View (cartoon, rainbow, N blue to C red):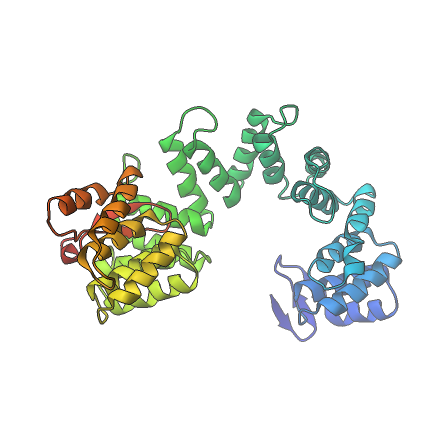
Length: 393
């Protein structure tokens, strides 16, 4: 958004004269009051101010402006006013019944989520269908989601759901592409389809999904039948994912710098990104940062802190951290040596199919050292690495 004098250039390229809008609003023109309220809600051309937005939108609604009802119902969600919250559904319903497609869509979403009204998937479907028939944007995704995932047999129509999601995907909706990827990964249509899973994850990433770029980066890091190994490309995907708000990518970026995977080996950067990941509650970052402290890689060795981090990750369900915690018990690193405890943890991890767990378990039973750790990538992909081998990686 750009502003020059009193002319506002909106994000869609539309130009508005703020002085004329304010003049009209103070003269109680319903449309001008609506525009001014919407500007205060979006913060375009004026400082974002919910209180002023709600005041002008309420005045516009009192004059019968249907579009103002929709924007007011959205602004009210962010405003701490129980009385106003109690009117949200009522305003949307009245606006939708008067033909506002955006209100129809939002009613469908609210019924789906149970926001400001009792959850009702049938009502959700009906309002979303009306919104779609009115050519309301961003409606197919929600309607397709209902048709595909509904538990009620008389509501579920997976063919129709797939059709709507694919149309939305083709029109650039990253959420639709990501959901399609998960559908094919889990085999919700027939059998799991790795080709279509990869296709839609790649597509979602290119359309701006941070989590999809994170996952596709892991595919590139490892290589597969459908993705050529490209570690530099993987690292760039991780950076893109982080730029798109996916904080989980910090764990992957940190490990890339720790082992020089697709970028320069830099322990300082590895530490920076892994610490950031831990602050963002990333289990993978907890596990990987613990490995740095456990082995003194780029930091002063601190086994006790490593054990603390491993335990935090285990409590959050990380089986990779369970293997590494077992190694700490086996070696007495940061904790009193307890071979029996190490064997117990490794057995649990081995039964879960975690790489290196069985190898470490056999080494432990044969009296050998258990030194191979398991590093974590945030989407669940794992790769066994010994810190002594990082230069070979």
